[in-house]
Image (tube, one colour):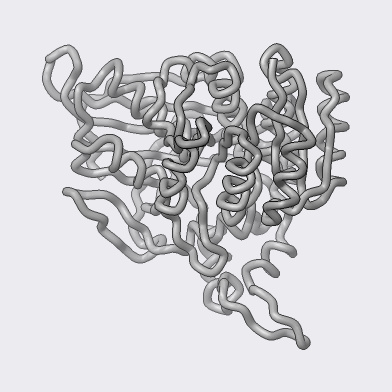
Length: 403
């Protein structure tokens, strides 16, 4: 039985809080805070209707450390679950340190003025958390998060070493909109328009954004174009799986998405450089995010499946030579909406956030300092994926992928 404080009130938060309420034997007291309290209240109302559980709600600016500290001291949680924007990771970590509480997030810190995804800022907090006897768990979403757990489960149970790793993220859902993003538009577009990077032979190889693609036949979705991108779990995987010769991240996008995004880039709407408009300073990408459909509103209309997994090649644990394994989850948008009122992209991040939280509050994962998912025992997390709506499958392939 534990008290948790969740920060943020988007689709991921909605899923996470719903799933926490469905596991009341673990999360006995749930508190939810965001800059816009009405969003928290809407989630709390849905949770009450679906589960009968009460969620307490608050208004908070997560970048205001003193205010965050006051709220944490008022609530007295054993864990703060950061499901706000990546810009807010460091102030929330600062507040957790001052208030003496454990911390969890789903995405690494990102400066507001630069599309740069690195763990260095958060890794630098390790000694401070360790000295306080606190734990911070980074990246407990799907990617990052489950993909890292998949990788380490393979290394624990199937592969002595991993030579090649490909992460494949496919959203085969159709939301019926001309152009919309399936999670926070600002973060999504910053990720997609940043240069692609992958790990190869001990160094980072950079290529222009959305220039390298491959076609892959995804189960329950079909053939889709997957584009080489940079994603933050590549950094932690390269660190914690040091024998990796190559690690890549692929994400699918439809032709219409690419066309819209190209036009928006060409006219400057994806820029994060401030401009003056009618006497005020605005960020074009933030303005674009404000006029695009909100991801949390897409659940009812989104149909189809997501398919996310990893393909790993390496030396078999049983000494039988080199083997290639493909481990993945397929998630239905319709089933996710029926259970939580949210589409599968939010579901596949919100459920792992709940599971990571469960690992910490039950003590199944316990250590002092700042840790990535790769450093934890994958088995209890993998068990909860199966029981909490994200079942996984494993198959052996005939050889390494040839793309």
